[in-house]
Length: 382
Picture 1 (tube, rainbow, N blue to C red):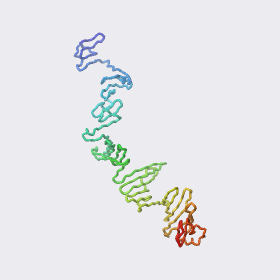
Picture 2: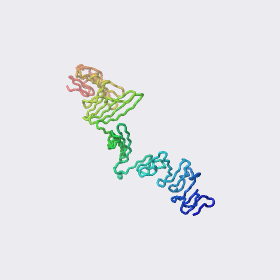
Picture 3: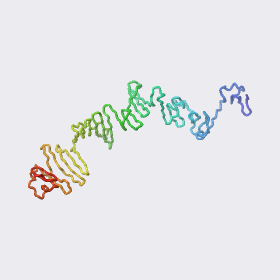
């Protein structure tokens, strides 16, 4: 042991430890557990100071190597386990995270937090090995709020699907299993009310499943509802000023017994069309022409139109007289098109037509009339 080397007063040297700032020449003044002990009341230990770039440029830093980071104004030490420069924390600031723990890990390099993993890959990374979990529980995040009742939402990773579950209890804390409300699978299937969706969108409700599509323009809201239960499929519409739509009216329904209703929620036939404001109609379109059937206050009209903007009435059915009236005399042009001009009666007024009329019996391309019978395309036999 050497004491007070020249130029180094108040120092104690020994093969096992070293003391600085000691007046006592005896080695026993140095704490036996310390390799170096410094003693002073007016000086301190000055740790090497460097920038963050200089710190990270240190080649193969030793575990626990300590420096002062002038870029961030913090002390950093090298953590060999995480292979990062960790920051010395001030517990007086209320920090409760440990850098390394069996359950919670703070990855200092990116400030990633891991729960159940020491190598978090995102800001918050929760890891569960179901085989090792004593309750076989998947990775779950629970949020719970208590006000008169306790309300719980669980976000749960069930391997092939992500679930959102809800639970409620009058107790201060919810301890039961939450009920599934939402599920999204790895096959891109989306389930509401089911955690086993069978289609891209699968909605399950014990009473009636509904999809609402709502938009608003100039403080007016418009809503279309698609509703389904075991008896029907409905399409409803509603609109409301200044607030979201609260009620809708059925515009279309298809029942389980194959009845289709348009404008009515209770179709009484295979197809029933109801319109309280306008005239209910059916249009059959083919080859750029339309054939229209219109209900005019209890009378049925048949119309024909084409791309040449020809639009004329063909037949009118009046249920009050139970008869069909040809509204216009019928002619056929050279192209085979039917042109109608109105007439009434039972056809008896067609007798004694001029031989030049299209009703000639010898004209095979026209219409023949005899004894109340009409032939189209060939003459009637005598």
